[in-house]
Each structure stands twice: as C-alpha cells, then as structure tokens.
Image (cartoon, each protein chain N blue to C red):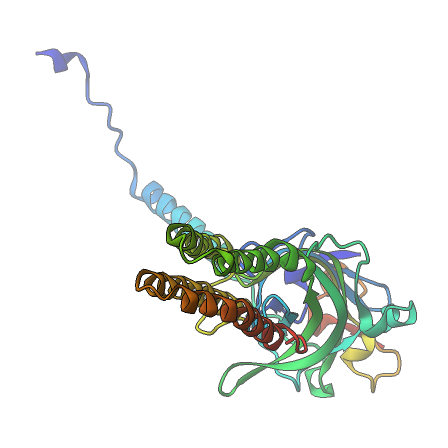
Length: 112
Length: 263
C-alpha cells in the first residue's frame, strides 16, 4: 500500500482558535467592503447663499481637423475653472478660506 | 496647494459633445489658493461631435460648439461666467483661439462664449457654458480639385456638337466617355460627405452636369438618326443650336447654384 508511508497530518483546532480566525476574517471582509464604497458626494458649499459662480476660461490651443463626413472636429482645449471665495457666501465679511488638507470638505470650509 | 478633485467640492463639469477619443492631459486635481480660490486646469484633446448643416457644401459656414455642463447642478445652483482675469489680460469673453492652429481648409471667423441651460430631458435642466467658433470652408480647394474638372467633363461632352453627324461613332464615343467619366468622378468625390437626406449645392451641380452630359448623348443619337434618314442638314442645324443652348443652360444653372451667400 503506497499511502501507508504518509501519515495523517491534520491537526485539530481548538474551538476558541476557530472562533478567533472566523472573527478576524469577518473583520477583514467588512474593511474591504467599506473601502470599496464610492466616496460620498460633497455638497455645494454655502448652498443657501445663492448660486455658486464658476469662472471659466477656454483657449483653443489647436483645431487640427474638421471631418464633414464623420461630423466631428478635433481640437485641443485648455480650460480653467475657478471658484472664488466670494462664491461661498458674499454676506460673510472675510469670505472663506482653506486652512488645512483635512479642512477641505465643504462643511469644513473655514469662514471668518 | 493641490488636492484631488474628489476631496473638494467642484461643479462636476462634463463635455456634452465629446467623443470617446477625448483625453484629459492633466491630473484631476485642483489648486487651492490661501484665499480659498479653487482653480482646476485641464487640457482636453480629441474629437468632438458637431452636427453640420451641409446644404451649402462646399460654400458653407459652420458653427462648432464645445458645451460644458455642470452635471447635477441646475442654473439656480451653479452659474458659469467668463474668467475676469482672462478678460483683464485682454482675452475677450475669457476665451480665444490660438493664431497658429493647423486647420488647413477652413478659416476661423469668430468665436464666442455664453452660459446656457442644458436640457438633458424635460424637467432635467443643468447649468451649462458653451464655447462656439464659426468657420468658413476654404472653397478654392474644391473649385480647383472638384468643380473645375467637372466643368471640363461637361465641356468635353459638347465636343460632339462640333463633329460632323456623318461621323456618328466619334460623336457617340465622346458622349459615352463623358458620361462614364462623370459617374466615376462622382464616386471619387462622394467619400468627402456623409450620406445626407438632402442635396448639397455640389450635389445639385453634379446632377445638372450629369443631366447635361446625358442630354448631349441623346442629342448625338438624334442627329445620328437624322443623318441615317438622309436629313444631314437638319442634323447639322440641331448641332448648331445645341452649341449655344447647352452652354447657356449650364451657365445659368451654375450661377443659380453658386452665386448666393454662404449658408
């Protein structure tokens, strides 16, 4: 019998060890699930103070082709969007400012 | 300081008419000044869709548009305005086109920016901002490469009117060759335009030219039949009339097709 030379090496686990392993696995899976959630939508700052004004600058660096048959045009555009501090509440005397990286979320805009 | 876009509020701007080929060259991050001004710079490179009205092709003038839309925000939540810094620096309306663009067969005439309301569906209206430029097609290229050869083919078909009706085979070969040349030429030019449900000016010109070449073939057949029936003088008379009538019809048609303002 060829299998006689391979003894059974299965080691029985204690119930407490099994429980700990399962709990650890559960915790890790929850962590992964939380990590895969899409980031929360950041609400518009000072939404009660009227519309947020976004300044736009557009510069067509190049327009290289107009294809009448395909009805498309090929372009290279440089676009700059700017949201000024005044947009976040002009009634506030000092406007709003960002003080630190963690304070960037709209609820944490630092207003004087 | 620079921050990823997902960490700060931004108007979630998308381009309505971008194709899948449009790429963004800069990272999706914004600069935040100490005074709180948030600036996002992006460079979009690729193709943008634009429905064209080609009734006047190739004598057409088109308006091209890049429409930015604040996805999720209505006009009472986000408003777009031209950048004041750019205007102060001499860039009218906060937009412009570089003078060194490489567009070979069009001339940019003007450009404009304006805020718009983008209606995705009834009741779904979003704040939008559009950059438009108007360009006129350089028609010299089409005159020299398309229209002039076509005119020469039509002229060629009239050569039969100057050939004696006694030489019927020569007359017929000229007319048939003109017809076949015109058909082959039509196929070569067709690739430059989409399949349109209407006729362009060039299509109308092609149609008139084809009809004239076809009628010159018919005329050659008539004079040949007259000659075969012993009415050679009458056949020559028909030829003489056609030498005048065909060019007059062609001239009037050409003026009617091409001499009116660009569309």
